[in-house]
Image (cartoon, rainbow, N blue to C red; front, side, top):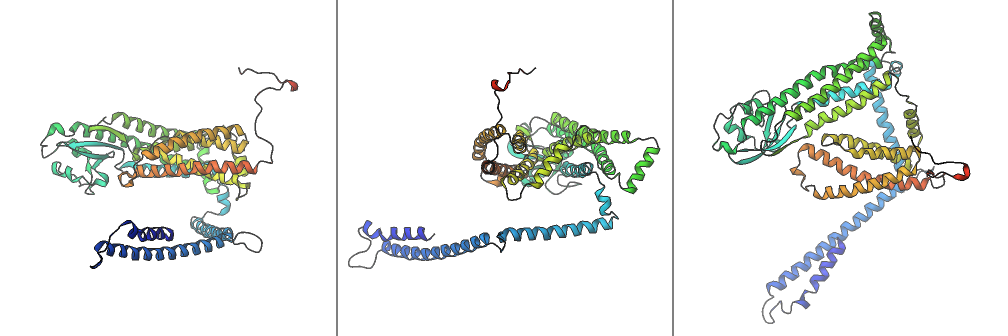
Length: 489
């Protein structure tokens, strides 16, 4: 700021040489001379203010650098020690809070240690999935399209039961002019209108019916929403079963729960049959979610009169729930029937836990997990197959195969170039985004930043491992060692 003010002050000081006559020789100063003098005073004032701010900023930066670089007697950084102390304090409060809850529920730490971890985590995931589905049920973000009334075009946001015009219902008052009952009833927040009301037709006829959205389009949306609602509601029944039965199975080693399962076995329901029942609930839940999405996508109309309909974030929440059910359901089923050995997973977790905190490898693990979580959340908008790059990089870190590192760097660099094109095409005014678009575009920015961070961390990770043996694999056979070409059959 100080340099900028000095620049303008020097520039203004040269104006008398540039302008030959700014004051008359015999009369009072001209208006131009007064303006230049005023500009000089303002420039000097702004220069002084800028120098003060620059000095204050430099002092604060110096103090901050002193705090960051300060070390204790043992040579450790004070900032790191302070962060560890705060983390330990928060962890202690969290442990005390959880212990209080467990004591009220009459659950001891010994009982808690008997929980089977994978079924317990999957049970909790099923509860979260159910809450997501309930949240998305009536949100006006299933489809979005352009409708018109008397030739005037409006943006419509539709749920399975209601519709509203404009962002946050800003234009919904238009519907009230032609449809009695809009903004009232169970969903009456003054901004939404029931699809059944729109399907019944306008109570006040349109002035230009040929330039208005036909009633049949609203009826098709009502039918599609009703079908999806029915399938999702019925699907929540096995969904509730997945939560209860999976949690019971996870707690089977706890005395009271074990008695319940023992009674079930005495009634002829063997442990194998119980596993099949749990797996059946997950498969039924998965099937209802898939069929509801397919049925809704197949039965919604193509248009509301202007342009095409597009699926929105609330439908994307159902899509995300379907993905989570697929992942956690498969994880539980292979665990129940011993279809996989968790040795590799346990080994990877132990390696992550034993990796030093302040190392490039630990940072790489954390960045990859954060990026994977962002990709999963972006399923609300669209399926992001770029998440497979995370798998490639994770395999490189775990197996130390540099071929996969090269593959990841090349593909990620190409994806960054495409992301930059997308970034420049995106609207800069975030007010025009819907909530779902704002959410996913924010995640897009986070993922793009993480790509640069991961590439930099890979460089640091390779620098750390310069002294170790190379991870390059010899692809060509070595005749001196008796190796021969092999053809895959």
